[in-house]
Structures are given as structure tokens and as C-alpha cells.
Image (tube, rainbow, N blue to C red; front, side, top):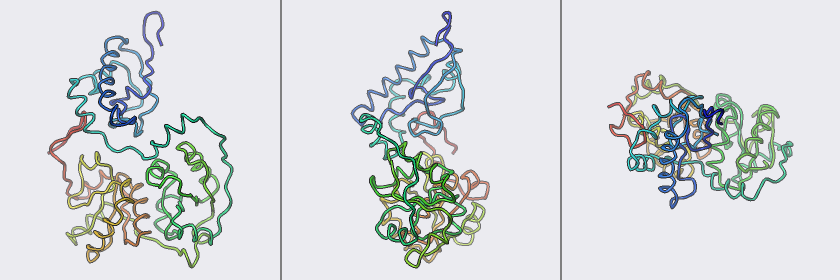
Length: 354
């Protein structure tokens, strides 16, 4: 937007983000490098042609997997981005090579969104689906369908239907559900009340899962049956994990964070399996847990506790004994756990502490 020769605002879409840029790999490997170079050229054009005081307005990036690296802040100007965004200060060859090398995985459901968008939107039905009985829930779990518990993860840990999966609707539930599910698998939603269920319905429609097959509200006592009994597992903090590790140096610990997070630092001795890879590597993780059975249940952590809850539910459904570490990762070091930080980074703008 220009007024009287002065640019007031720059709408950058998914290209220039706060402290980062949009990722160039979403259209496939053949276009990744050309788009990375076009991205670098776009930043030079912005620096050369746009009034420095203009406000920058991206379409997304605030936690979106469409950004190449983590975004910073909720407001910025062109001048601030030129000073702080590595895309403006890095040589083209370095920019392209580091940007591509540092790209982490993105949600699997992205593959379905392009064709869906090109086909155009169809009618959306956000009315509640049919009610699932306890017998229905047991049958759907036995059939390998997804029965998704939307309640807060602390409630799930304390009491849930065995075989159901924890995707706390108050967290980033839809992203990871869409990332992990086999596309087309029927979904049943369980919630405290209809509002939780309909909130998740709206989120699912946005990624192309248009209709759950059934739902139930109330609580686990009314959802469970002899075929799908009640279950629970412990919740813990990093302080608890540090105490358990001090008592047993062979304590099995599982880190479910993404590769880029793990590269920034991880608990010494932890096995790393990003949550979105967990179902595909379930046999591997189950064997590892069985080999370590004498050392107790698997302590599962992530960045905040949300992904650890989802992962714990997947592993428990597969017969693995778990402890859900429901804590922020920065508290691990404060609790006395040893954090290993790789000395060299490969992501654009990344810094590491030896």
C-alpha cells in the first residue's frame, strides 16, 4: 500500500515471514532449489524497492509448518526485517544451501490440500454425527479406526478408554492428527461436551477431513466396556524424570520432538523418534521398549507435553508401558538433566551453545 510516494504496508503472503521465509519445498523436490533462489531474489527486491518504515503483513508463519524456520514476533517493519532476518544478510549460495539443508518435515496432509483446493470447496456439514455407544467405540478400536479423545491431556492420562488416542483439542490437535492418520481412516471423536467435538470438526474440515463417523460426550465411564476397558498411566515432570534417571541410569526415555528441535538440544541418553514418524516406527520402538522392560516404563517427553500425550496414547495402545512427561522442555535442564547440544548447526540463522 502506497500513499503519496511512501509505502505504508507490505503484504508478503507466505514469502517474507517475521525472522524467516516461506519454505520452498512444498511443491516438490524439482522446484525446491529454483524457489529458494527466487525467494532470495525477492528479499533483495524488497530491500531495494520498499520504504523501510512500511509494516510487514505475512499471511501466516506464527507456528505454521509453512515457514522454513521459526518465526519471531507478531509485528515488524521492512527495516526491522532487513536488520534481523538472515534472508537479507546471507549470500545467495549460502542462503540456498542452508535453507534447503535445514528444512524439517511438514504435515503429511499437505499432500491432499493442493488437489482439494484446486477441485474447489464442496458443501460443509458441521452438524454433529451420530452418537457412538460404548459397544460402537470398542468395535471401532478393534477394527483399527481412530477413536480420538479430545479432553485435556491430564484428564486422558488419569482415565481413558484403552486404545483411544489423545489429541487434546486445546493444543495443536488437528495438525498432528492430520499428520499421523492414514488418510481415509474413519474417525470417532470423544469430548467433555459437544462444543469440544464441534471445535475439532471445524479444524478437521480445514485440512480435508470433512466428516467424523460418530461422536460421544460425557466421560470414559460411559465410553468404556469389557471389550475396551478403562486405563491410565502416570504423568510426571522433568524433575521426576531427573530423579528416576538418578536412580536408574538406564532409564528408557523417548524424545518425540522434530529433528530441528532435537538438534538444538536433547536429554542425554534419550531415543529420538519424531511424533509424526512414531506410527511408522512402532515396531522398532516397541522392540526397544521391550529390551528395556527391566528398567521400567518409557518416559516420553516433547516440547510442552502435548505431543508426549499423543505419543504415549499410541504406545500404550500398542502395549508399551509409559510415563507421560507433561512439562516444557526448557525445564529439563533446570531439573538437572544433562542436555546435549550439537556443536554445529545447519539451519539458516541457527546458533548453538557448545
